[in-house]
Length: 190
View 1 (cartoon, rainbow, N blue to C red):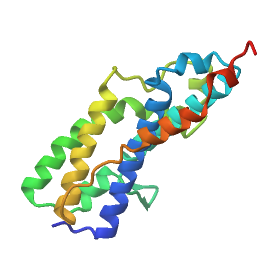
View 2 (view 1 turned 135 degrees about the vertical axis):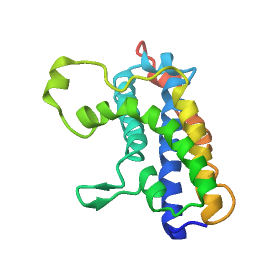
View 3 (view 1 turned 60 degrees about the horizontal axis):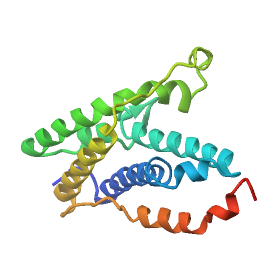
View 4 (view 1 turned 90 degrees about the horizontal axis):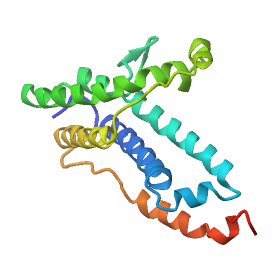
């Protein structure tokens, strides 16, 4: 049982699920799309590149927001820390959540600079330097979402009962979207 209301837990689970969906949407549409190179070479390539950047930045922002402090500038944020601090978890549950939170924070820490210097603010020094911010090794994002799913499942199970599975139906949505894009329409030579 949790000290947090069911509605707060559900909203937290929704935020985590949204971060997952935005990440998966970007990945399916741009990173793992076998038609990606073909589409980026089309006359719509510039727009697709722009949408890819927007999608990537937005999905990274959703992840990092989950790792905000529980209280920022006197305002309470619905974040992992908030769930940990105000959850009133039993000691064994708290220990499981702490282990997962540590793994999740390790990944998110790699994104904090890009959030603070570019995604949320236009940090002059970062912009002028053009340095790469927010880099992580291939596959670390997948592992992050596995841990996040585990964290969410524990929180939901303890507070409400049962798991809260992330929605991967976004794959179908991306597939349907891509089915509407016909290569001959975008062929630069026509």
